Image 1 (cartoon, rainbow, N blue to C red):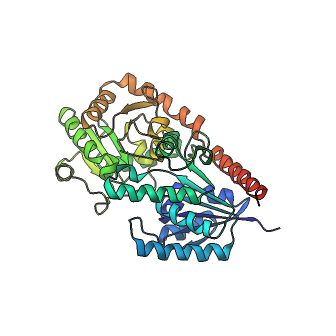
Image 2: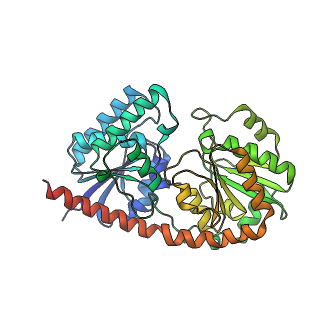
Image 3: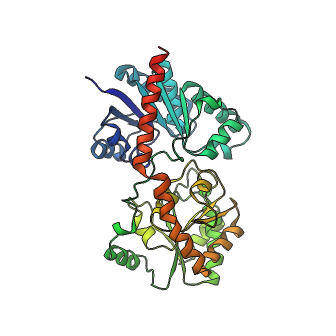
Amino acid sequence: MNKIKLIRITTVPISLQILLRGQHRYMSQFFEVIGISSSGKALEKVAIEEGIKTIQVEMSRSISPLKDIISLWQLYKIIQKEKPEIVHTHTPKAGTLGMLAAWLCRVPVRMHIVAGLPLLEATGLKRILLDFVEKLTYTCATKVYPNSFGLKDIILQNNYCPASKIHVIGNGSSNGIDTSYFSTEQVQPETIKKLKGEYKIAIKDFVYVFIGRLVADKGINELVTAFNVVYQKHPSAKLLLVGPRESELDPLNNETEQILKNNPAIICTGFQQDVRSFLAVSNVLVFPSYREGFPNVPMQAGAMGLPCIVTNINGCNEIIQDNVNGIIIPPKDAFALENAMIELLDNSEKRERLARNARPLIVERYEQQMIWQLIKQEYDEQLIAALRYQ
């Protein structure tokens, strides 16, 4: 008996590889899984690591009507050929193109994960256009899955689709977290020693860490400004910025660039495949993003026993409970960020209490196997519902 066919689509292959790691292999027990994304080494790795068929379709992350029409046509042809029972999309552009193509092909189950809404920072005609595109995506989907309760509220407030079409899986998250992988027990003392030597981190140093893209939307301008003040008061402080630059999409301001250039305590490591050792050498995660869906980084840090400073935005304020496993501050507020950073540096008793709570809360609410089982259950329920109406 042939397995039911499931197609997963993301705009860029690193989303298939990193954000959904392990999920494809798990689902392959029950479905014939095909991954579709833009070309790249990450897509090749998905095929090997997850053991699934992959197909490349170039998709632009920016607004590009001609390229988008070409991508839509390619997706349409692939879906027509493969005839899947389920198409499940993730990330904005793949969501729009994938859901539209699946709708045109009359795929019975069309599921879209909302893992963030970049349009929230847009204004004017661009916002009007992005609102229309978002509504189009949800109209073509049979079910919409915001990966946080905050995102669900935003979708309903903006009337993107009716409440009956929306469901949050579990406590949120698109993939949960492998808490056996993100554990301090998985990082050897020799690895920590080597990393500290490479980046000149002394035993007395207090290390803050940020993991993610180094762009304005992630709050990097505020973080660098705040840390510069912290460093003047506490010369033993260091800041690890772990992630790639994307200056062409969302550049940092000139003042931030100057501080990055001149402050020796700010260490830019670039993209890192394995971030566990960077979390292991750190004391506090700082994650001052403007907008998120359901961020993996605070879950990863929490599983590694780190207290987190995050902004009061959806996703972050669900993973972190204020003064329980971290501190929640307003977004775009460098002064509040500075105060929180100094508080956790100076107040070791509070920092250790937050750290003790960090891992148990993540294990209880976001264990990966539990999330995968809930997604599988959703596939089964949606297939049954689709057959009922055929």
